[in-house]
Image (tube, rainbow, N blue to C red):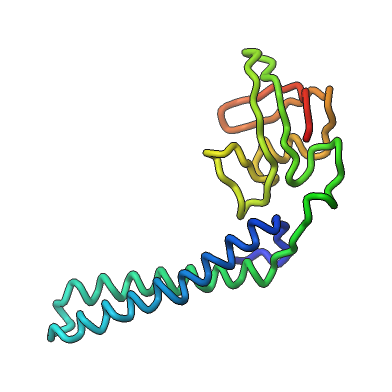
Length: 158
């Protein structure tokens, strides 16, 4: 949580983060407090594994609450209609051809908090995201990643 700049995110991402915070504070936290109370009632806390496990879970929940509140405090909601069209920027859906195997790949550039590899939503701070930022249809890019160099041609930006 050391970064102090704004976190750019979509309205959907902001609402998802708010819902996550609500769940942490009003579902997860009360549940763990009840578990701690129940474990305390069992007696000797020094050897009470349930109590120690519940206290550890409480620490994780409180850390998640603090991190989520911090992210929300820095959130800068960017409306998709305000993003530059025709270039690879936040929220752009980019269709690429891998120049090594002619396979088509499609990525959507999102903030780090909205990354979802299963949906091909990649962060603008990832190596591929950084390599695509500001590019246009027809551009060929070479992107250094841990596994080597990726070579793409941008064929479509939505």
